[in-house]
Amino acid sequence: MTKDLTTGEPSKMLFEFSIPMLFSVMFQQLYNIADSVIAGKYAGVDALAAVGASYPVTMIFIAVATGSNIGCSVLISQLFGAKDYTRMKTAIFTAIRIIVLLSVLLTLIGIFLCGPMIRALDTPENIFNDATIYLAIYIWGLIFLFLYNICNGVFTALGDSKTPLLFLIVSSVGNVILDYIFVAIFHKGVSGVAWATFICQGIAATVSFITLLKRISRIKTAEKPAYFSWDIFIKISKIAVPSILQQSFVSIGNLFIQRLVNGYGSTVIAAYSASIKLNTFAIVSFGTIGNAVSTFTAQNLGAGKKERVRSGWRAGFSIAVMIALPVIVLFFGFGKNMIGIFLEKGASAEPVLKEGVRFLRIVSPFYLVVLLKLVSDGVLRGAGAMKAFMVSTFSDLVLRVGLSYLFAKGLHLGTTGIWMSWPVGWLAGTVLSLYYYKRGSWNQKSTDNNHF
Image (cartoon, rainbow, N blue to C red; front, side):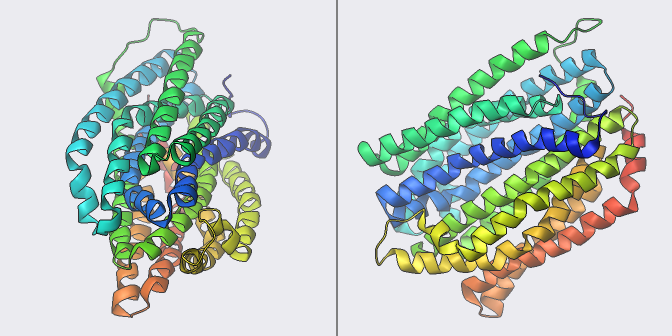
């Protein structure tokens, strides 16, 4: 089922469209959270640390998949809004071919560099082997990760946020069940966690792909669409490449932070693993509202209805605040309970709990700030104003990485200094993103770029 976001009251349309997307991302994040929870509960603190140590590397691959998804979905949204269904189908077929080729290439590279990447992070020896095993299995499943992301992006571009939700509910529940069976019953440890993710991602990707092909076959076109177009490939690349770079540089920045965290030992690594999973769950959930605003912006600009974009920004921010407030209360007031989900009770859990709670209490109050950035980024991205989008994001990244080392080592604040770098980076990125949105240059940018 597709949804035309160019008509109707913006706040109502955006709410109905974004809520299924929000639940989709929440269930998707259960993959990562379930891995860490079950590893920590049934395989111990070192297993939790091993999964956490490989997490920043897996985020690089996720970043490339997400960036590709963004580039493809923006153009598809614009063509859908313009009712140019023939070229829209060509864009979908072109995107799928690009994504499959890219995933195969990254799989080959990843397999050869798996061990060296974990070693380069100064991963402690007591968790090195498990971290490498987890990452290797994860890399073999990259084609499923990429294929699912592009299918999800196409569904969203066509205004359908419910179909991906259904797939993710089934896949996420299956992942939790398999995690428990492999780790708690068969005692496969970290490798069991990785294989559970591999299997469930594979099923989700296959079913999504088949459903997508059936869905687009029902859309009637005046002429037969091409299965690949260099012109559309270039148009996709103009948005996808900056998005991939942005997402990848953020993940590479997280590698530097992970390396800094690894220097404080497996207890701090375990605390960071738990707290960063919760933080990522929150930020990615908020980010779905920005993605919804991006689709809303792209469709309306494609239809020549620029006046609706600012209404979409206001509606998106209001929805994001409604979601963020209970999360802030939960993380700040009940941080110990949240971190405790990942750990078996005992003396070894106490220092992990203490460090994880410190992270959540420093970072979570600033979620209201980052919401402004995410929603403004949605407009910039949907309009194709990628330079402004990248400048605001890189400013956040550079400050966060640089200040984490300055605060931790230069000012001798230790791990507290690392956690403090998040709010400072967010503040800088938000100021820039909001400035570019308010200035309105994206409006002219969309006029220049969107000649299909």
